[in-house]
Length: 600
Picture (cartoon, one colour):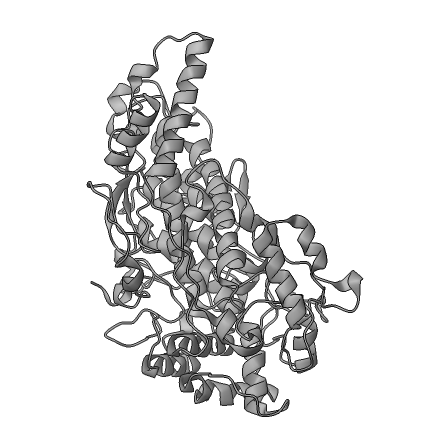
């Protein structure tokens, strides 16, 4: 087991109570140990329940309209039974802080009214919680907004999505996440220390991490904490593992994934990977009145400091700016276009092939029917079935499934406070400005040298945020961006050959104005699958660079997204018009090799 795998949060307590599924296609899931790959037993149950047979070419011969309708209904029924019966109903535990921490000090209540001490109005919070739990949209009329000026009030982001249904792939409540780290735990403290260091190193170019004094100070402190669970090398947090996530390949090559650096060909358009970013050294919510105004849900009190020069993403601030405004599937659509699959495309005489300039031409998964069984598909190339339209469309589809599942976790189960709010509670305790009320904050955080550094710059202990509005107005745990990343990357790794070597890797210059060849000793170890995992890590920790998400908000959400994608791929087996007996090969984020999504 790698150092990275050892430092992923432990799920043993949840796994002990979960049933294991039989067959080679079963596994104990990383979240709530829920087996999410459809098993042979699950398929047999689906067929027995409907009186149908497994999807094969035998039901695809000449059919009249009624036979076709019956065939389609049969497949829908089998997908329904598979979703319902092959996955155990999980429990949805939380960390108990809502009941155990005074003043709801580790619960989400942004946009509700807060007192001068930063604590939420209890009646407003209870009304908010009751509205979520009831599932009645009318109950949100009883929730008191926090901003004195209604025209400037920021709304809560889609709390009713916690009760929505999805009809392809297993239902959103089929999936569970383990409890977030508790308020008084060393793990929670370690994550907050990491948040402060992420803010302190926000303007350090990624290419300078190895030699930058601040980054090395951050690595030394994180290494010494009693329960910091980020990835390590040789037992230590290093510049190669600093602010990185889970999955093989994330620490190989430059910090930024090639998919966030290279241009992409989108039809006749070239998508240049240059972006609107923010001017350096300008942080927000570092004034207490500004912080309190934003907690009450009022719109930002200042404008974003836009850099007039568009840049390739070069540091944490640039990456935070990207994930603050991106369309959720944006990065993964680009990854499809850059990976490309010209082996399936018929060249047209006299027409330029821009993929040859901007794309890798990576082959599909070795089990892909059009690759493995190419002789059975003469004069054909895929499009709507396992082709370009299929994989591009699936990026949006899996994104929506991920959001639906995660919004239930956010609002319906965990309601974890954002890091910016915890920074205010910490500030008030350390300064004593509102009296001697204390909270059980772990000594790893209270004694952290990064707090003294923060205070020396801004005169208080508030967490510096990259955006004037602070975090979004929805709970922290888990991250929507990270869930979508886990889902989309899982589909991409299933579809493409993960072992494909990255040719001519690039990295960004320190000023963000150009790409330069990456010449590190590990350049030859970079693979398509590794860069896809790195893309997930970049998007996930872009939210940490911005100050709006904890580490576990991201890494646990990555695992949730992985499970959602696997469940969706399994149900898609009923849609194919040909045999696909083995399914896609896939390396999960924990290194497990599985096959998924083939009809049997």
